[in-house]
Each structure stands twice: as structure tokens, then as C-alpha cells.
Image 1 (cartoon, rainbow, N blue to C red):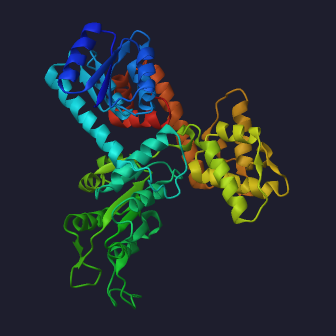
Image 2: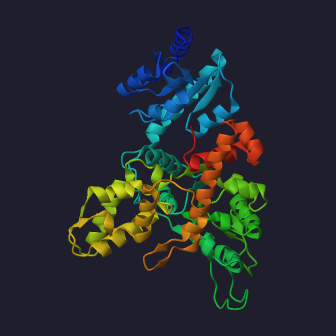
Length: 464
């Protein structure tokens, strides 16, 4: 029988909600404090937690991740009398199932609880013990949440938008969704939109007939046709030229298209997965990405966390990569010192998992015959960054981001990303301080929409 936990310091409201839940045929428990609620949620399995925001021992929103991390991973419905639209948006962004204002009527509370129970039960059925991870390493709550979404996406034919910074593993997740779908035995075709010259995008995607243009000495069926009965993965879709976006939208609508220089239409039955590290909503507002295409590709969405936000995964990934590299290159097994792991945990990892892999490879190459990896084996740019952060804070200009890596400078793209991230983070902190934490005022001053501001605050770890 589904179980619901009601966490509210209003005993009369708790009794009324518990009675309503029991009338729905569910079991109901109550708690008058966050501490009591978390204890009960960790000690028993619940499908849903109805959580008040203002509690005598803290904020329900601050405790939301704690309830989500409980063994049964219950859905959380936020209950508050504040009627705060910004708080409502924050609750949803933090993973709450719903947000209901006090005092709730039976009609306003019953349907969300019913839907949350159904979703929780359905999610438990979707996630098989034998989920194919396709090379994804990680046991943090953030990664388990993403794996849950990947499993849900694998059980459907919906288009999926995978977002995340460079190096967070977007292609790995696309592969995992494909491997857990009914199309797993079909082709998995990867198209890097950023690597295709603009003049060649159309012919690469749609294919071309012999003689269609200078140099077309043979027929090429194109990536879309190659993905027939399989999955087409468009990486960095934000780089797809606007002119091609319209033609591609028609393919998604009709499943038909005409190759360059062709007369007859071609049919391709494929499942679409896309990924980007860009803000497609902002691009759509600026006219750089078609709004109708964005709606079409975002049937489901998976937002991958930065490596720095994956508690406990850095050490896990490090051990995995060290073991794998030693095995691949026939090296003697290396031990990993505490100071090496401490250094990894302290570093910011702007390049995320991809940068961690390169750091491990560099460490092994530097260690040569040393049996133990220590912090001194890390790349020079990481050691410099850690040394700088260990000193008393002082204002640094973005120009300092061009520090030397061993053997040369950092790639310009990485320098730009670091500089932009530093400036954005500093700006947001000063903005919130100047506005006294008033989000509407911050939006007015900065010219950002609420959704965009919250997204930036989440990216830089500045959410309360």
C-alpha cells in the first residue's frame, strides 16, 4: 500500500491531510519537525512526502535534498502559506514534484498526491536492476537522478535533450539511453554539429546523389538514413545552422526528406537524441535557434551535473581511470595517496570528467616507476590553481586564466570558459548582495528572466 509522510508543525493540518490520504486508500504518517520527518523517511519506505516550507527547526526547501536521498527516494510535494512564485520555481528546479499553497482544499491536494504516487510506483518499475550504464561511472545522488531519467527515456521513443558543460559525459548518456531502448540492436549514429563545416551540414545529414555538386562522385545516403531503425545523436545541436534547422524540423514531423540533388523522397525511422552545452532558450529568444525545433527536441530533458557537484564520485572515477590505464598499458598497479585524492577534491574541474581523465593520464606518465601517485604528479596547471586557491583571496583578473600548462598554454576555449565562469560567479554574488537577496529586484537590475537567473545561480552553486 502506498505510504505518504506529512511533515508540518500544524498538528490540525497534519490530522486533516492524514485523514484525506487515508480516504484515498493510502497509509499516512505525520511529523512535526524536519528532524523527526527525516528520521521517519530514512527508517521506512514512503512514496510521497508532503513538506511544509516554514518549520520550527529550519526550511523545508533546504531539507528537500535530504528527503530525496532517503532509501525509497520519495517524491516531495512542497506545502507553504507564503504563495511565493520565486520559491515555487526554486522548489520545482530542486526536484519537488509539486508546490501547493496553504490552506489546501481536498481537490488541490488529492490529485498531486495521487499523481506523485503513480509516478513513484511507475519509476520503480522502469528502473531495472540490470540497467546498462554504457560506461557511466558514479554513485552520487546527482548521478543516480540522471540515471533514473536515462532509464525512463530508454523506455520511451521520445526525443531527449541532454544538457551539461563540456566533459560531463553527454555522449555516454546518449549511448546509455540507446542501449536501454527497444532500438538497442539498431545503429547509433553520432553527428558532431560543431565539427561540420556549414556548407557540408546539409549533405552530411541528408545525403546526396552522384553529381549533385562538384566532388560528389558517388552517392552518399547521409547520417539520417544511416540511423534508420536506430538512434540519431546530434551532439552540440546549438551549432546547427538556422537554415538547416527548418529542414530538419520537417524530417522530425514527417520522417521524410530529399537528399541533395535527389528527386525522390527518402524515409528514415529513427529516434532522436541531442546534446548541447549552450543555453538553447536564450538562443531561441535571440533568434539563433528555432523555438519550434526546441519544443520538438525537448520532449524529455536530462541535465548533467558538473563533476565538482558529484559528491564522492571524483575518488571513484580516479580509481577507475587509474586501474583502466594501468591495465591498458601493461603498467604495474599504482596506489593512490591521500594527498592526491585531497588535491582532486579541492580542484574546481572546469573541464569536468574529460579533464580528470587527462589529469590521471598525465599523472601516470609522470609517475613512471613510482608505486604511489601523489599530488606532485598532477599537471602543472592544476597544481598552480590549487596553490593560488590556498593563498589569501585577492582580486584576480581574467587575464590570469592564461597560466601555462606543462608544455604550453591552456587551450583558448578553456581559458575563455574559465574567465567567463569567474566573471559570472563574481557578478552574481555581488548582484545578490546589492539587492539584499531580492530575486525580482535582481532580475530587474540584471535584465535576466527569473528562469535564466535561477539557472545561473544553480550552475555556480549560489542557490540557498
